[in-house]
Structures are given as structure tokens and as C-alpha cells.
Image (cartoon, rainbow, N blue to C red; front, side, top):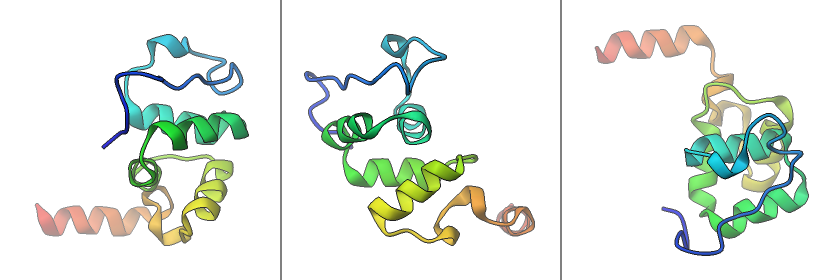
Length: 102
């Protein structure tokens, strides 16, 4: 759950959202991933102020794709290992798991 969503909306640098209009962002997970991939330290601080650590962590570990920079930063901030990230799990294991649960 995010914190304080009614005011103090985070303000991110142009560096993090150079390719999109940040005022039109729709989706917390997208915003979190984008900041970890392209943002600066102030952008990360804004995320931590606005979103819970658990929401940030979950958005990152459940991402289908993440750049190495984002993975490394998430590992440092949240004490994560490679096998915690969905995007780093072998495709075979994911397909097998889906077949078992189908």
C-alpha cells in the first residue's frame, strides 16, 4: 500500500522520464521500475518517501524485465539475491511451474 497518496505526489527528474510525460504516469509498478532503471539518487529518495519499501521491493522482484542497474540497486537497498527476481529465473522453471499449476 502506498503512503500519503492524496498530497505530496513525488516529483521526478527529467532523467528518469525523458521518454514519457511524467505528469501522465499511470501505474505504480511502471513508475517504480522506471525510476530504478533511469532515475538519480533524488528520484530514488522520492520513491522511498512516497511508496512503502514493500511496494517498491515487490514491483522490482516481480518485474518481467529489469536493467542490470536496477537489479543491482534493488539488491543493495533491499538485501536481495539474484534468485529473488522473476526476471532472472530460468525460463524453463517458469514454464514448468505454470504447467504444473494449470
